[in-house]
Image 1 (tube, rainbow, N blue to C red):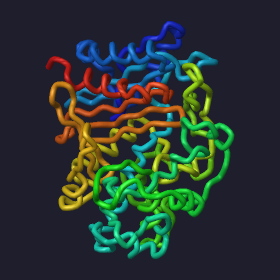
Image 2: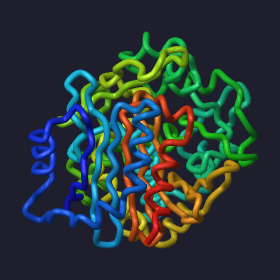
Image 3: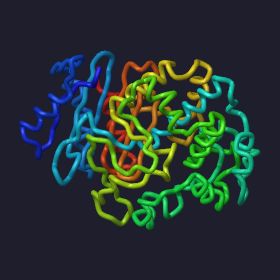
Image 4: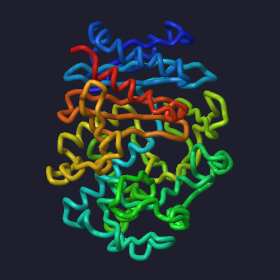
Length: 386
């Protein structure tokens, strides 16, 4: 069932526009949410309004609580046209992509095609070498839980979203070989297994292992194993395609930290630099369906799901294999993933029993630097009075 619309608030949208948005959400299988459902999410709406006041052009939140399904938006999806965000909008999900990639790897383990304690060298001989990197000492598990210590290629000035050079390179095509050359040109950030150090290089390597074992592209395996079985029709891996499927809003980036809010429009860029680590395009409904299916064991057997939810700490959150366990201010444990960068911030989380779930999207990366908006909205949704 599609998520059902709650109230929409934006001063620049007419009553006719609001009605059109609400009608567009309804399908033969959807029923309008009762008024008390929207009232129950008043704190979430307040947190969304705060995000807009802090500089987000627009915010979309979709939540499921038992049988209640609710969607609300604030602000605008496009600063030029002033149209509000829509639950049908496609957006780049950022590092939520990593949950998809980890799921592919663990499916291969469940099929007996690999062991996540295999070394990287086993499947990618000679690839992880240089300046102290050694794939013979790094396991696939350490790639997936970010304890490999491998240098993060996205820290390079030409690739980093807040670096001085990214705007000049945003339309460049990058091959995996080029990206790995960047990573191997720098020393490791930690010894293998020593501690949690976030690195996008880990998931680029994981995707290459998937391709080495299956003989097919990452994109093919994503479709075959996840998006088609779950009927995630709004979810794609774009390759080098710069545009978003319609409907879609715009994405606004601070790009360089000296730029004032709300930044510049970076909706169209070449996503090859974030292949398998942050490239996926999806919708709120699709992300909700994906995490619900994953946590209910529809994509992985119990043994692999247990491995996925075995965590290491970064001092704030607990990181499993492509999944993060977060704790709200009221002590509620949530499982999911946060994404950010290149004009977006996303969060898709669920209680472990999947009875209460939430997906949110901001069309800016400006607030990700503060690190509070996504958590504030999650706190408001999961800590509200019952």
